[in-house]
Amino acid sequence: MSLSIVILAAGKGTRMKSAITKVMHKLAAKPLVEHVIDTAKKLNPINLSLVTGNGAEQLQPLLATKQVVEVVQNEQLGTGHAVMQAIDQFSDADQVLVLYGDVPLTKVSTLQRLIDCGDANSLRILTTELADPTGYGRIVRNDADEVICITEQKDADTETLAIKEVNSGIMVLPAKWLALSVAKLTNNNVQGEYYLTDMVSLAVTDGISINTLCCADNTEVAGVNTRQQLAALERHYQLLQANDLMVNGVTLADPARIDIRGELITGTDITIDVNVIFEGKVTLANNVKIGANCIIKDATIGEGTIILANSMIDSSVIGANVNIGPFARLRPGTILADKAKIGNFVETKNANIGKGSKVNHLSYIGDTDMGADVNIGAGTITCNYDGANKHRTIIGDRVFVGSDTQLVAPVTIENGATIGAGSTIRKTAPADALTLTKSEQRTVKGWQRPVKKK
Ligand code: UD1
Ligand code: MG
Image 1 (cartoon, rainbow, N blue to C red):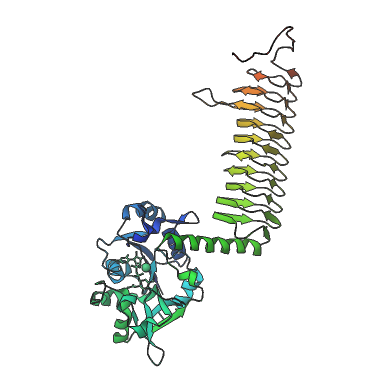
Image 2: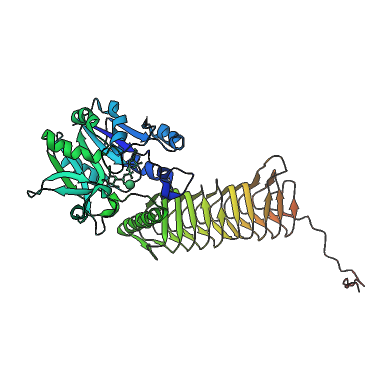
């Protein structure tokens, strides 16, 4: 049975107190509405449209990349009115699924169960039971337990207000019937809005059967109206992801103190200490250990590699059995071969560092190709920028660079070369030889320390 999906997202989101339209606020670094779009796509609808209104221009780039049809609702006259604007989208479909752009965590499996809980000619409503149902539309049933209508909070009497089963807003409707009947909605209610929920009483009149699926997990149907609710859903979502990691063989020092803002692919026997943030796409091989407070973005980390506390890794490829940190900063284009070592207060960028090579302390290695088994002394700087252009530093295998050295690019240090401490190297340092640029040590007789002027 062909399915058309419409996502409602024209509302203001007044309570967010934001220049950013509500559905573009982010959960796990992804706009709320993008979560809904990604979920909707997994149901393989024949078309997917989204009703915009407030802040439409903020949504348009996302809709373009996700290939979602935009339906503009110029005036926000209610959820029924919003669906009415999208009628042309349903003409080839058998059934229509209505989703909300501010309800990000509904599972695909739950939506599939909702679709399957009645035939294509029935009206299907995703409900949930809430201890405190304030604000929601109540599911009103007759003595035979059949749904007869949904009554909004503001239109409800005391008896109706006591009902704990509420409308999530998510519904599946027969497409042809919806297209014909939606025009019958009126706005004779306290809010003066065209309610989509009134389709339920129209269905009763038209003899359309009504089915409900009660979602046990409230967070799947929770909407975001305030920043507090956004923060609460963010924590919930992170805890779900942390749980998935543990199920898949990852040890977390504290599942409440990890943030995954993207996709994290993991092997087994990985250990992650507290306050680690993953962004973009990160892959961790088996036996990786990550210390506290690391931020790792768009990176691949090889087997057995250890990343010590307070390190940042961005757009880098790290081999196996590498040691990084503490306090290391690996910037985009860093490629570390197996068994390399990057120590504290070392910054790398666009750098290939060969197998077993070590940069242990206080260095900047940028725009560099470094061979295997190199030792870079503390405080070594590759001077890659001449004020206008960047240049590369080429370092061969088995090179030893003494501490506090500047390698002024473009420059080459050949295989097996040794550079004396404190050198400023501007020309090729030949293979297997000692090169140094500092003058010989001398002692000045009679020299006195300067004294403070009185
Ligand atoms: C709606 C339901 C209520 C349900 C609740 C669940 C109706 C009449 N009520 O109430 O039964 O319990 O959701 O959260 O449907 N929107 C538009 N255009 C409009 C109005 C709304 O696109 O003209 C969009 C909003 O952006 C939002 C969604 O529809 O994504 C729901 O609108 P909202 O105003 O929050 O409805 P509620 O009053 O919460
Ligand atoms: Mg709402």
